Length: 292
Image 1 (cartoon, one colour):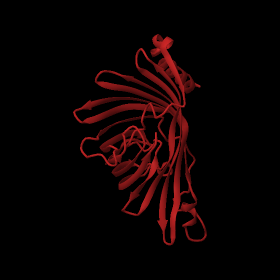
Image 2 (cartoon, rainbow, N blue to C red):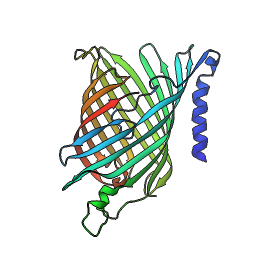
Image 3 (cartoon, rainbow, N blue to C red):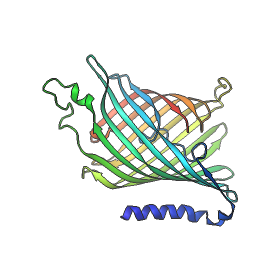
Image 4 (tube, helix red, strand yellow):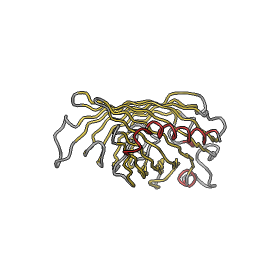
């Protein structure tokens, strides 16, 4: 109940900020693009792609998307308030003997968001509040690869993992010479958690820098070189930091559809929540597509 009140208060605050401009509001149903682009190096974001780990030939497969449904544009302040939905999942894909592309574990997410953007002369301020349900599961790949008698490969088998969390992120975007930099920070509170050893509060911060001036266009489309880094601070069950960095190239406009190839480094708690208390270090090579 307390979280519901908090959600209404945050939404009321967003709307209250813009109340002087109500008389000049333009409403749009199913607007193009996204008011707040997903955080590139954060694992728990809607995306489509494959990340390959050469150490063991395993894959992390992302399937999902976020979509803005309603948009309120305020001409006097040039600000925008959008409401959208998010559906996504990522899976751990393993290979074992003659079995290929076995799904070992999966994390699923769905929920909604409210985003607010305010342009200024030399920077672009944005906020995103979202409420997400996250659940995790072991899948048949973890069970069937085990010799007879069949059993779960993971010691102890699956755990009941659930997080219903509200998250607020503030970001600022600036342009410096030929580069665009977005830096951000925020926190989350989980209203419902399983197992009970999880901590309810978490925080994250990071940055993304990209430029389409370093390489010539390809088929009249810009080519972006980018570097992104994300830090999560969460109690899983003890508070610690998880870092992920990405360095890569995107063919296409940064804020529209495109194809990405990148190098990834990940260090910290396992991103698959069935293994949340494991510490890992992974180097991978990724491919993704954007169509915001």
